Amino acid sequence: MVHGIAQGAIAALQGGNFGAAFLSAAVASGWGSAGIGPKGNSSGAKIGRVMEAAIVGGTVSRIGGGKFANGAVTGAFVQAFNHEGDYGDSDAAAEKSAPEPDKPYSIVVDGRELNPDGVVLGNETLRAEVSKLYSDLTGRLGTDDFQFKVTGGDRYIGADGRTYSSTDNKLMTGSGPAHIRGDAVDLRIKYNDGGLVPVSTVRPSVNNTRLIFDPKAMPNHYPDQHYHLQLPKGWK
Image: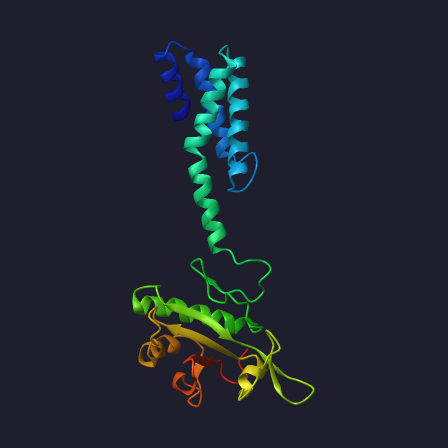
């Protein structure tokens, strides 16, 4: 309604047909609000929706006694400036927060993928607790501008009796039973300068989850200083 009155008034001031402009803008606005037309946030989809709004606006203007060209311009204007911005924002937000369907072990929190390498973590509870840990830690640090990434997950015992990564079948030495049970995760938790976020900072956040430390597998035990965390034995 507001779009129709505004465009009608502009048309009248320019010597055009108020009624035709009103109808063109109102119908084009309703068309845009209904989300009719090509879906998505690509340039092609946006152009398609603007073109459809132009055709609708022109047709309605002609029916109302005005010129098709004037109505087409009005319809395109309303779609481009009053709907495409909203459509793009909501679509981009949805794409940012939604995990990719081809990544079954994806862990997305506030648009950030915590498992970008697709490390196998078959335990859904474990993935949920990693998500909780990240959220708590960002609140504790007051920022999300630090490194937080899954680097290790499920493992299995091969026919030769040795332990391998379920992600890339790489031979793993010194692997504990929690990884084989699917109850453990390795995490890189560092500042952007490469320094380790200290255990004294991470521990309170870990305590707010179901995850626990293994005293024999602390960051200082590993060359890359990763955090090894696990669910209590038997927890699913």
